[in-house]
View (spheres, rainbow, N blue to C red):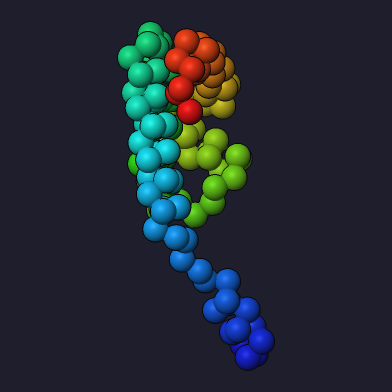
Length: 109
């Protein structure tokens, strides 16, 4: 590596402020609470498997290599054991329940 490359890498490695870390942790906890609430509302075993997989992803966010939409879908699909069609249907059900919760609880997020 050249000196410029080393300098670019060194300058890109910054630590977030402690306040930001605390805010992120609180937000994750709030999301997990909502997911547990949704888990209690779902009936289908596929929906339960999907919610549990999403909770697992949230619990392991720091260990995941990629955090884009496609990667998260693949992680959830692998963890849940559902195929793409089943997972898509379960996610639609979960989205509807989330919207209902958000409409009924104004300070949800």
